[in-house]
Length: 429
Ligand code: EPZ
View 1 (cartoon, rainbow, N blue to C red):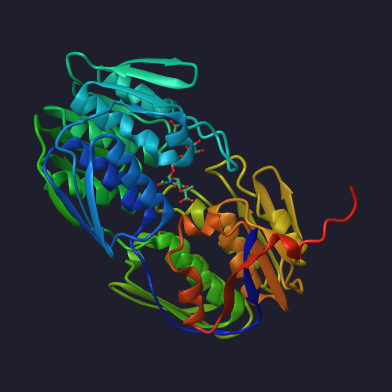
View 2 (tube, rainbow, N blue to C red; view 1 turned 120 degrees about the vertical axis):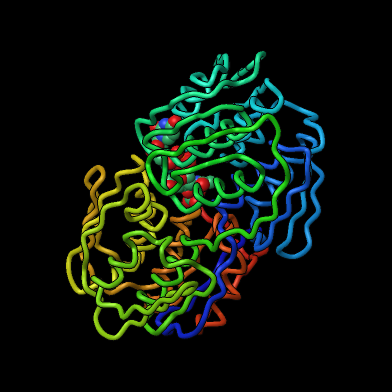
């Protein structure tokens, strides 16, 4: 059995897309429920595989979760485990973020190291160094982090060498449940970090400076519950806007804060796209030829690395030469080879990609290697002549809720298909 998404390209996209709650906000905020015995309620929760895996993870630790449509109620009255196995962490990298709440609330944790993946080595040294500064005794053996804080964690003044989103999430969660004042310097400024901080404040922590590089946290002995509406997914939204750029037409994304895009909207303007936006929407209209741009990814508010692959796909249709420098991950150009199968002319030299736009793109059979690489192939297929087949669509299920329905509603010819084994004729040895 092989499943795939099939797209017939060159159909302009026109209409409105309702953006779902942010995957990268849902994961840390659901994990933060480990910090309290009281119930937490969430709205605007996306129906994504990573969210289901997170709820499964929380149940492993004693969480009682109930989900109806986009609403989730969860409480963790008692921590019933302190271990996250490699299979759990391998299935969902963000599972590693349970380390801080387990330490802060249960004073002990055994969590498998997440290891690298297709976009890079992705070490977690800053997570471990920060928690050690807060008094945790940390050993790493056979790929597992063994951490204890027998006398409880203590407040600390921590300097991050890079504004790591995950490390900032972990240290925010730890510090929120530690009486006293902790400081995270060089913190990540992403909207998802601000969203986690505002949830922790609702739970009783006193936090100032989120959205800046220095966050001050006055933690508490005990934290209460929270009622949260997840922020809109800026990466899902940006992907739809770039699809509109590639295929032509006018696409409006509702339910997302334009301030959460950082430099991305400036890039869209430079591409000769007409932009309109309000408090909770952005609209992009392609009036004429796409213009090439030079983009550099970076921590928020710079251009988001998670939109790098979809942007590259759209720039294949620009009239000229664009460049993209990927500064966040060492290996996030896995989508280039697949875009080239569709006719793209792209050269890669270490962290730099040069895109010779206006290449006549044609539909092809391609493989989505990871969530954002697969998204870039959807963007490219929508603007390409002919039919494309994108294998490994499960990657898309991790970050794009109801992708086929949302694209069909704005004029795309897109469908999900399953091929039976007998359809394949195995030739050769
Ligand atoms: C989060 O990953 C996101 N994931 C990623 O989105 C996103 O690309 C990334 O932040 C950057 O914005 C979730 O929110 C679930 P980092 P995270 O720690 O926290 C290095 C997607 O497609 N680093 O900011 O793992 C690391 O290797 C995913 O939705 C260290 O060296 O990212 C990387 O090069 C992909 N040591 C860079 O920092 C550390 O201790 C950024 O990592 C931590 C990180």
